[in-house]
Length: 205
Image (cartoon, rainbow, N blue to C red; front, side, top):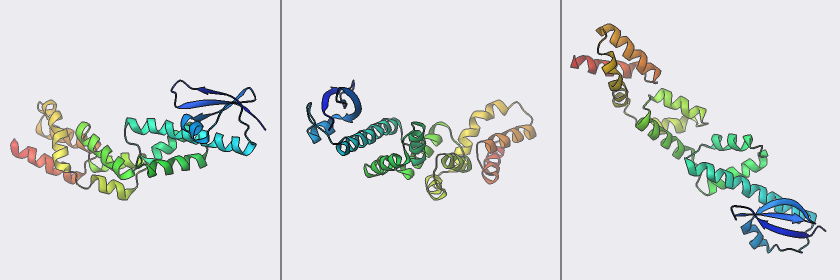
């Protein structure tokens, strides 16, 4: 049976390089080393070595994703796509996803709510545009509807348009209205919302 000949901490001290018979074999978490009581001179069966490698690989994938989700919330599709780009096997991806859900670090509704809040605060858009963005992130219609259901689109559209009206103020009324309509439509607002906002603006003139 192969024998552990060296255990060397990696730079982050959270993982350990394990050497068998003088050659690097694989990396494992430092917690696994302690839990399994691994030590130099210990012999491992091929089954034990393979199990340790799989555990080490899975923990490495989880650590990668932990860094990803700590930067900002992520949807399940974003996490899956990230792991696929890292060439992680499908079975391991499913295990990572399951672990993230168990730790409450993955929640598509929470992600959708966060996404809508960020957009309405920094880059306001209509429900139609927001739902399209959420679909691209792998969010289903039901969750997207919940996340956007409480939006006051008229207030949002007015907020977006106010910044443009100063530029449009020098234009003739008809052209100004056409410009405003096209602009709000590109921002994902429906005709009903656009009409309501433009009528309010018309009342001010």
